[in-house]
Image (cartoon, rainbow over all chains, first blue to last red; front, side, top):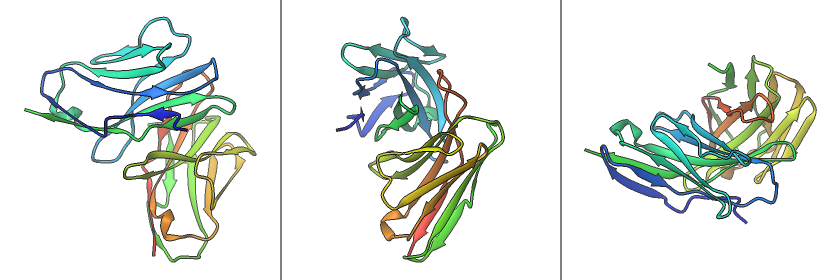
Length: 114
Length: 113
């Protein structure tokens, strides 16, 4: 069974608009963490944002926010005011024990158009 | 710069030969991971390590082995390379079990012909 599911293989958004990238997860571990990474066409993996399972508030980092709905097991990434440079692959990932395994979803390709 | 280096960056090898990829870190991070990235599959975990000599399998470990004899090096070995192992391989490191991000190496493009 998929541990991390990203159901949107591709998304389009107009510059300056907000966009939500979906991520659902599956774990029975009460302590876990959720990450989002960006991979531009150059190939490097860039950390965007982190949410811990016990965090009361949704995480925010600049234009990125994580809409964490624990009961629904979802951790959607919201990008506000999209920029052309946001065009990239976006991966959702989950950390869970034992051994602090780090599992990734299949990714969503976001394209921002003028 | 998280001080993580993968080598080699590119490799072409023949089917049936053994191949070893190296991940080297300079910052004493506890956790190290090996992934492969293929179109449509995202990053799939091959093996990971939570300390020297402490390793475990990920979701796609068949045909791969790892070793971590010292903190700074995590080696991935393809025991007998097959064409299905043609991929981009990423190493990642994390400092500890808290909310620390994973830092990634630049990737190794491996082609098995």
